[in-house]
Length: 309
Image (cartoon, rainbow, N blue to C red; front, side, top):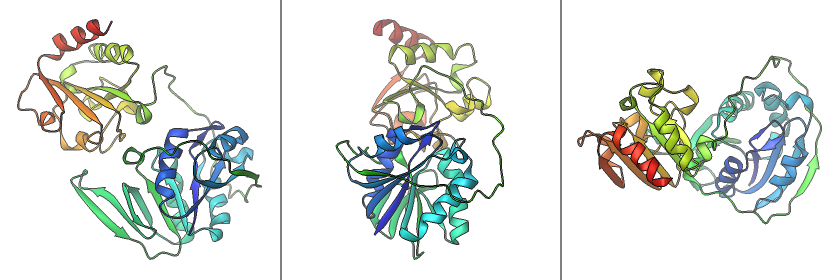
């Protein structure tokens, strides 16, 4: 079996965490070739070549791949697909955009968001907000698979794969880049952070969310939020953790003022250690928490922040 893993590359830089975790899953399916497709991605390709277990790295550094447009990347992957039994990518926003296009062009299904690999044809994935695990066996000639990176450990370094420059495929010209609006932050990226501090509806307002941010900054952590907090305008959309937000599995997850709705739990229950702070002792979050503190977050969180100082 030969596997083509589409690396997570943005602005010519490799998202090593997402790519290395997807690589762990891909290695269970066969021999892995990594594709880096981005304008000026030679550095990303060289970094990907150092990942353990990579047979080869393909580097497509054409300008048409520089702004995460799905159509030209899909055309490139389809042009390469004949040599591979599996096309795999981490289940990120970019991959969720491009993989369905690849599958449609190949006339196959997408096996999305897998959390386990049984064998090269059979995969596990969560359904019903993570309350059940579905086993899926694909008979497609080419398996198109996205990997839920939160459930896989990252592959280590130490590889020495060769890097091959490849040309661009014909651009279908179905879309063009206009502009990117990216929020800058000094905090770790939410999906790859080792510590996440999240706030819920119980925080009460956008101004009060600053106490969540203060604790996160003391811990060098990412900031998350429940959907209720985001819908109420307390936090931006890209902080949302849950079934309709981002899936995280940090070493430490601190939930402040979050009741623990099933949709939120689906996005964070794989965290190594879960700490819950809530004044409602009946809150469902305490059922999954390793440590629970029944207290008013407006007393507990500032006190915790001060003690860390």
